[in-house]
Length: 453
Image (cartoon, rainbow, N blue to C red; front, side):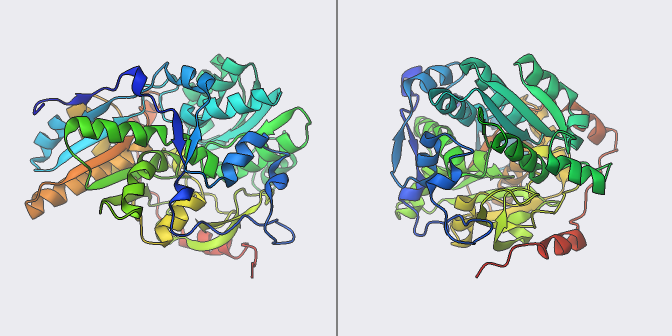
C-alpha cells in the first residue's frame, strides 16, 4: 500500500444517497426573503422556476436523500471517480505532507458539474418540463447541463458570460454539440440583457447578469424552468457524492485529511468534497480544517459583507443571506470564469460565519504557477478554477515542510483545463496579469444592497 497512488472504488460503492449537511449544522442560514416585502418565502414562491422535487430538497433538513436509480445509472458513466496521492508533487516540494486529490475531470464534460446537472434534468423531465434555461461562467456548468438535457430529451438554452464566450469558444462548441443553444450574456434576448447593453455596450458580463437573463427567460414561458449550477442548497446536496466517495478512498489509503480544500465561486465543488467530512467536525469526532479558496479579484468571503442580497444583477431572485460584494458588481475578466460570482452559497456562508470553514484568496498568476507545476508533476492540466485549490494545497504542503510536520492534505481537482489552454498560453507568454481587488467598484455596488431589518 505504501507506493499506491491511485485509489479506485468499484461501481457497487457508488453512493445511493446524497448527504444533506443542513441536518447537522449548529445554525441554519436565515431564510430566503421576498424581494419586495422582505418577508420569508415558502416553497410555493420557487415553483415558477424549479420542479417541486428540487424545491423540497432545497428546504429539506433530512440527513440523507435517496438518489433515483435513473440518476445513478447515468452517474455510472464516470463514477466513482479516482482519488490520487500526488507523490510526484510531494517530491518536487520536498514536503513531509501527504497530498491527495479527488479528480472530477473524468466526467463527460470534464468537471464536477454533471453530478447536479443530471439530477436536475431528471427531476425536470419527471415533471414534464420541455425546456430549461441557465447561465454559465467558464462553460463547465453550461456544457454539463447541455449533456444532461440531451439525455432526458429537454431543450436547453445557455446564457454564457460574454468574456468567457470570447475566451473559451470550445466550451460553446461542446454545448452546441450536445444540442444546447448558447448566447453571450448580456444579450439582446431579454429585458435584463438589453438594459445592461444600453448602459454599457461593451459589457464583459457576469454570472449575476447571466442569471438575470436565464431567470427572466424561464419566468416568461410556461414550458420552461430554470436551472442553477451552484449556490442553492439542492445543488450542493447533489455534489456530496464526491465527498462520500473520497471518505471511502481515504480509508483505502489508510489516512484521514488534516485539511480539506476546494476552490469557491458559488461553492458547489468545495461543498461536495467538504460536507461529508465536515459532519465529522460538527459532531466533534475530528478537528479537520476546511479551506475555501477564491480569486483575489472577486473575494466574496474574505472581503464581502454578510448581508441579504439578490443572487442576480437585475434583482429578480429572492434575497439570500450571503457574503456578498454586491449584486451589481461586475468582476474583472479573469480566466477562472466559474469563480466570477459576487456572492457565495448560503450554506457555506453560514459555516464560514460560524468558524467551521476558513477562506483565502489568491491572484490568478500565482494559481497558474501552481497549476503548471502540478501538471508537470502529475500530468493533469487543471481548470483555471481548480488551480486555486492546487495553489492552496501547495502552500499547505510548504507550510508543513517549514514546520517539519506530517500533514494530510485533500483537495478537489474539480475539472481539467484542456478547453482552457488559451489561459495557459497567456500565462506562459507573460500576458496574464493579476486583477486588483476593485475596492471602489465593490463599495459602489454595496450601496445598492436592499435594506433588510
